Length: 253
Image 1 (spheres, rainbow, N blue to C red):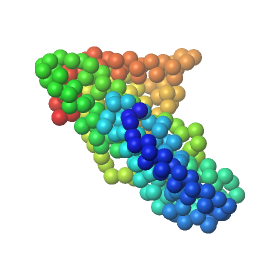
Image 2 (tube, rainbow, N blue to C red):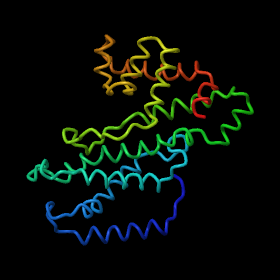
Image 3 (cartoon, rainbow, N blue to C red):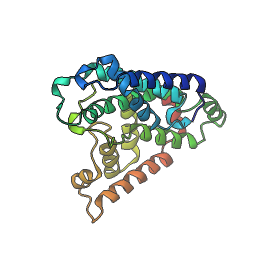
Image 4 (spheres, helix red, strand yellow):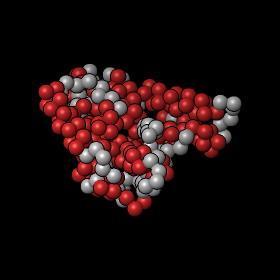
C-alpha cells in the first residue's frame, strides 16, 4: 500500500464518524442527499480498498486517490438515486448499496483506465526497455496481465443486481484499448481462444459466464466451465509469448 498522510486521514475519519453519529435515528426519507453521501462514505472507502494498490494495477494512483474517486462516484450515484423505486418495506440499506456499488467500482476503474497509458509502465521501465532495444518481454507480460486484471469485474456480494442500472459514462480510452487487444488476439490466437477471451472480458460485447461460453462454443465436458477458464489463461499466456514488445510500447506511447 502506498503511504499517505495518516494524521489527516485520522482527522477525516473522526469528523466523518461524528457526522454519521449526528444523523442516527433518522428515517430513510428524512435524509438529504448530502447526508446520504456522508452515510455511505465508509462503504465507498471499503470498495476503494478492495482494489489493489500495487504499481502494476493502479500505477501512480495511491489509496487516497482511489478513495477520492470512490467518494466522487458516490456523489454522482446519490444524485441519481430515486427513492420512488425503492421498496421501503425491504432492506433499504442493501438496495442503496446495490445501486451505488456498481457506479463506485466503475468510477474507480475509469480513473485507473484513464491513466493507463501513463501509469501502467513507469517511465523508468520504458527507458530500460528502450535501452534494451525492445527485447524485454516482461513488458508484454506486464501489459496483458494489468489490462485483463483491470477489465475483469468482481461481483459485489452486497449488490442487488436487479437494482443496478447501466452506467452511461462517456466513452474513454478503454474502447481504444479493447480494439487494440482484439487485433492482437485475432492475429495470434485460434478462433476458440479468441472467442473465449472476447466473451469472458466483454471486449466487444457483454461479458458472459464460463458456463454460457462453454455452451455457445460447444466446449463439452463434466467441468466445461473449468475448461473455459483454462483456455482463457492459456490464451493470455500465448499472447504474452507471441506479441512483440515494440507493439506494446508503440501503443502505450
